[in-house]
Image (tube, rainbow, N blue to C red; front, top):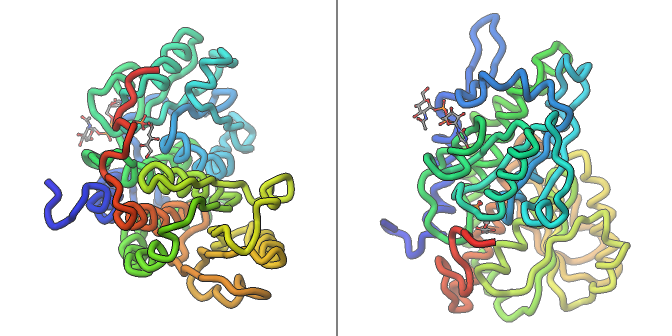
Length: 379
Ligand code: UD1
Ligand code: F6R
């Protein structure tokens, strides 16, 4: 039931304050006067010790689910420090399910393999799970579908509880997956004096995230106006780095799969190694430059794009317009600032809205893009 919405994708984008609330329900613990704030993932509590002792975490998924895992890698590396690792973070590697299978890549018994899948039925991810089980890794699922093949066949896992997702383009599942992986990182990592402030800030940030999502959804009209400007373009580049490298990949995936406009997510650090050749006064480029440890590097990327007369749309933190738009003209989209590692949840939303409006304006099918299926059950 679409209720008052025209399309499922629109409904699911708008549902995110509620879907994130259900994802976190019962899993965040405020802590009392002398007790620390913490997280409780019922599905993992008996396996945490094994995960902490493992040699690495390897994420496996496809499409948007892979991107969600990529968004989570930096904070998992940061927060997963525990006594078994002498308090340094666990190594985290990334595998696209089909590529892992093509290579029969190394998966070891000492690995924790985390399978991320909204449907829990994606054939490539499921085959990769069988392969990891054969190699005797600990297999953890992060799925949205109770009773799905991946939920059933993993040793343990977490349901993201985002509610049924109908639009072929994944939106609310993506943000809930990131939030689950943030809780996973907090659960794996030890609560030490040195990490306490950071952990508390992330937990407070999680509590407040639905409100911040409500705020960023107010950009709807602004993104519709932007879509009107871009309606006839052939291509759109999206530059990101650090916590928001995944946002660039995921934003571009949304644009291409529903609006049928070519779009490419680019790691900003790779700009000079090729993509810079594409830049001219015609090609629209989205640059994600919200406030985090990479901010000054992104400022210098923006300056170099300006020097090539790039047509820029910059996503930045509220109040940062003047800092990102020096030395050239650009369109700025200001988003609310949250704890840096949770910022990908906020930053993807204007791009989801842009993809949605571009599709409607270009007259394509939003909920059933041509050639695509919600659940890819063949390899
Ligand atoms: C569970 C209940 C929830 C209840 C809560 C109360 C289910 C599905 N969930 O939630 O209704 O409110 O306890 O404490 O009954 N699992 C996998 N692979 C996956 C996903 C999950 O093996 O990909 C396993 C988990 O290890 C766990 C079970 O499925 O054993 C349920 O997972 P989850 O729903 O995340 O657990 P809780 O949040 O504790
Ligand atoms: C993109 C999209 C696909 C899926 C991919 C994996 O919007 O929906 O890229 O993310 O097919 O699907 P799941 O998560 O069901 O394994």
